[in-house]
Image 1 (cartoon, rainbow, N blue to C red):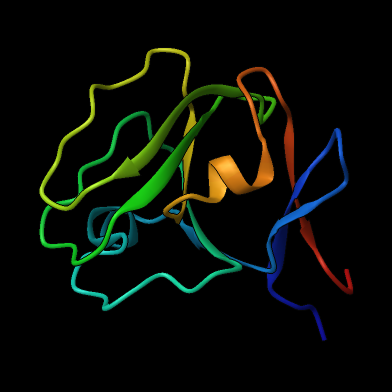
Image 2 (cartoon, rainbow, N blue to C red; image 1 turned 90 degrees about the vertical axis):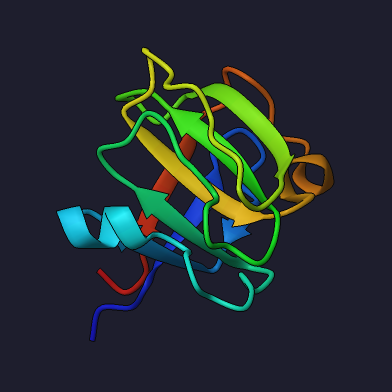
Length: 121
């Protein structure tokens, strides 16, 4: 059985998210994390395609990682609070939403590359 994708930092090999949910339909991209109570540590939402996000109707802050086509980090936003809107990033092709403070805790930086791996594939 094929498992849920995980998100890795290529340079360090560290697992940033043990459970990577993918939002790749119009509906799942629109809804994102709205109306959820929290985003658990070790979980993330990968929105694709996407180059900007909002946190309307969210109850918690998140970290936002903008990725280009090669999954290189082109912008980082730490601790984005509820009811905020970000500017679209021209170079971004997808966005990863992580629990607040994950960027600081993991040390990821602009230019770093991430990779999604479906365990058991």
